[in-house]
Image 1 (cartoon, rainbow, N blue to C red):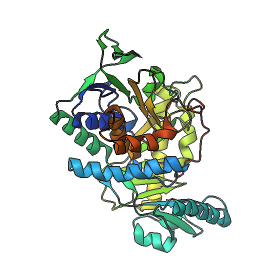
Image 2 (cartoon, rainbow, N blue to C red):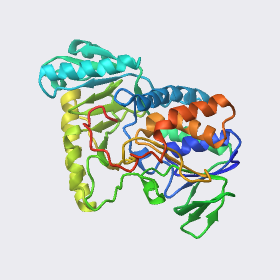
Image 3 (cartoon, rainbow, N blue to C red):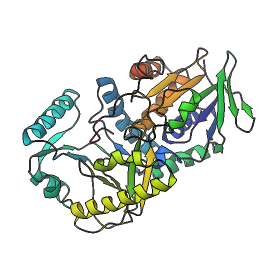
Image 4 (cartoon, rainbow, N blue to C red):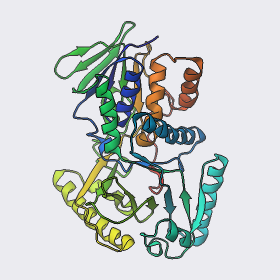
Length: 398
């Protein structure tokens, strides 16, 4: 069945890419967001584009292909937001033997996946990223890992590129909060909080954490027990700086990467547990201010110069309960389509295309077959979808 009129709920990174792919195929697209484009998790994302720690094989493959798809989409839109600068993963935790085992196991798995990865010494790192004090991050020496094909996404530039392309096709973001979804053999039914009902041929639910309110098994960011390191994270944004950081640096002390405007994105793995203290607006401000100060201390240690961090976000994750993407139809008439993923930045370009192809009915057996194969493990009706996965080690698990 070909859907000519499609409503996309959510104007984050996944909603925008899906809407753009659908519009480029000639569909009439209505794009809704409860707030504004990129107002949710997409606005507050470290946006490390990678696939080095995404087991099992099906998930790794999806992320690896997602990286390649960003190249295609960037070329197609004439953008400069995807930077394949490479990333470094370094850990000083545990004994030297434990760290060597960690590196060996990661390399064995990635070599089996034919994923570019290289062991590097502290001397190598000084050449790769000379602005970083590697003696502070790896005081006992030892090896780290370098992933030459990885990089980062300037999400604000990416969003602007997608929105401009959509506007050129007559699609703009309309503010509207969806309160109810249903479907029948004739159409989908989208009820808005102002009482308006839309009846498109199909609906794509790409509302991130808000997809929970529309019936998808997504982690509850407003749970009674409050924020946890599984559902929330602190993300710092520095002032513009002339520090010439060129790559994504991921460690168990600090994660840092550059931006197009000279600012740096920062995370501190060691403070993630403190999200539980941010129970209301007053405490959130106080905790974020303490985290901001700690970020400035660690930045000065590794960069050798003070870098103010005026902004710290407490960011809620768009997290399907079992940690894996929810992509596919959720109803018998096949008119309501789920599109939610934690690794949305890495996966967005690929999932946008695959969703459009499935809603399009596939313009050929090859396209339909590719989507069916790649997404088979990630359908919303899988048995484990609603089972919350435990928290995993923060380093390199994004």
